[in-house]
Length: 487
Ligand code: ADP
Ligand code: MG
Image (tube, rainbow, N blue to C red; front, side, top):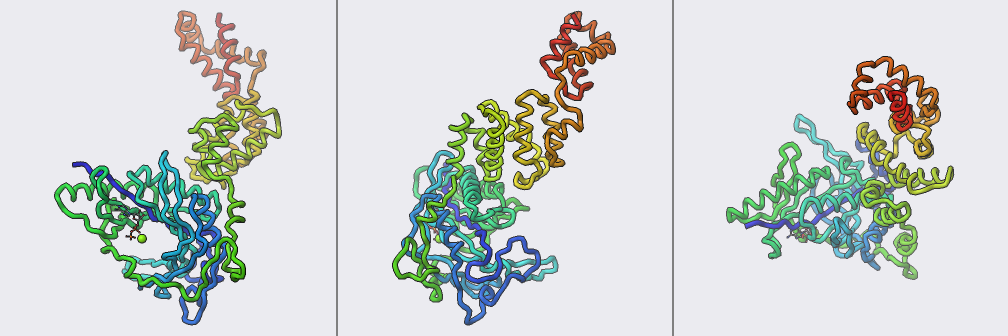
């Protein structure tokens, strides 16, 4: 009997705001000193009052609109009560029955995954454990705005789960609401997974936490599919529980049996007013969120951008996939195109050339050095100039690669590099003929081979010419001259 996985995701993302969710302490994910961004509110001192961060609420509404959710007319915060050392108040302010957004969708790999809800809550502090068995608490993160998105159990395999998480990450970055870096814990994925007989009733689910990368999403799902299938095959029952992903063991380990909503004794947060979305007369200013204004401010999203690139520049699905894969690559590409456009009559071949260099040679340098495209030294102006020079045949493609490497290393502009290194393409016939004659004189044996009909002898001589001219010789012209002088 084979079983089919049923998967639903719960994804948290830290929102990019200046201050925390309910107080004026800074929200600084890069702070390295513990407990510096804290105040009586986020430390849970008695008698303090929370004040909601409007920017955080607007960010969640933005995400909701981008994912075709229904935005609540009214929404409220609730207390989720539990004890843990990283939670000074003894409760987390979250949203229970009136979340900001409900019933959305996200298309992944040609299928619609339904989104149950997106709500807003506050992050907890962080426990730091040392090797001697002591634990420390850092409250810098306590009270940082956190959105939580929950999907319906519509996902059926690891590929879809990873594609969903990646696409959501891209959208959060495009919307500029979160950096959504998994390694930094700015985005966290929890996987709910059960197995069922094909098309049968859903089985008992297990929740997996502590997943810190996209590959861990894939590995944890693969592991659970095996573990649960094996248990079911032996006639065992799956226990509903929370398991943790252990990256070293490459296994999930049981953490605790599943708690349910009533364990948290949720109740409405008495210190915060209900939120009014869509403008109700007389509601207090800090509780009113203008949904239509947010809708009007939404930027172009990855799918729309991809479609526009395909149409406008006759690019393929695959080419635009990479270009729109993150907002920095997309904006770099658009900047390059506008530079090319300003300089000359722009055509499809020129854009295609730019895309090829961006998706292969530049991408290779980025990947090899681990430099994010947003931080690299190659400016769009310089990149466009290089593409123009290649297009006009001022340099050969092998010289182009060298120039790009140098641009990437130093940030210099291509014409300077070409001049410094003497890389301008040699098409001057007289100059080429002189070099070719030298090469012919230096390799009499190869010349004899060529005359005896060995075709690769010509390749060898061409290679010598390229080496001697440091890749600057125009390949077509060189081949013609060689053949002429050898005959
Ligand atoms: P709980 O009450 O245990 O929190 P929810 O119904 O709120 O469960 O669902 C939490 C997450 O688990 C959602 O992402 C949902 O899609 C997923 N889920 C629910 N039932 C199943 C199931 N049988 N198998 C896999 N995932 C499931
Ligand atoms: Mg739930």
